Length: 196
Image 1 (tube, rainbow, N blue to C red):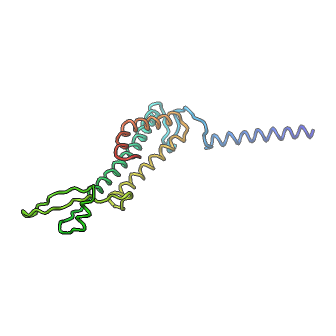
Image 2 (spheres, rainbow, N blue to C red):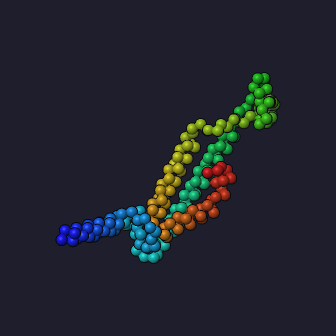
Image 3 (cartoon, rainbow, N blue to C red):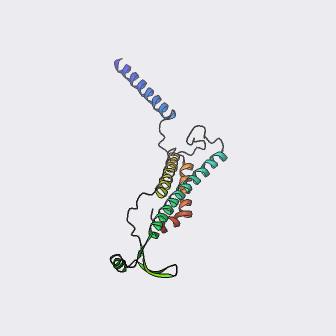
C-alpha cells in the first residue's frame, strides 16, 4: 500500500513537472531548435506575418538590413581613408634663407622642390608633406561622423542578431543572403583603401 502510494506520488510529480515544462516552453521559454513557421514574430508581437506574402516581405526586409550593415562598414572605411588622405595633403612651406630648416627639408626623401612666384619675385621653397602619425589627432569633423556610423552599424547588427535568435529558418537564411549580397556589392570598396 505504501509502495503503491509512492508510485502514485512519483507519477503525479512527473506529470506535474511535464506540465510545467510544456508551460514554460509555450509561455515564453527560449526556443532552442530551428523552426519553419511563417508566422514567427519579428521584434514585437505586432510584427507577426499573417500570410506567406507578409513573411516574404519580412525576409526581404532582413536581406536589405544585412546589406545596409555591410554598406555602413564600407562608408566607415571610406571616411577613414578620406581622413588619412586629408592628413597627407597638409603641407608646410619652408622659405629659403633659413638654412637649418632648408637643410633638413633637402635631406628628406619625401619632400619636393617647387618655385613660388609672388608679385613677380621668385623664391625657392621646399614643400614638405606633414608627417602622418599612426594615430591621428581628434577632429570633430572626422570622429563625430565615424562614431555616428558605428552607432548605427551596431544597432543594425543587433537587430539582425535578434532576427537570427528567433530560430526561424527563413529569417536566418535572409540574414545570410543579405550578408552575401552586401559583400558582393560593397566588398571591393572597403578593402582597397583600408582593411576592415
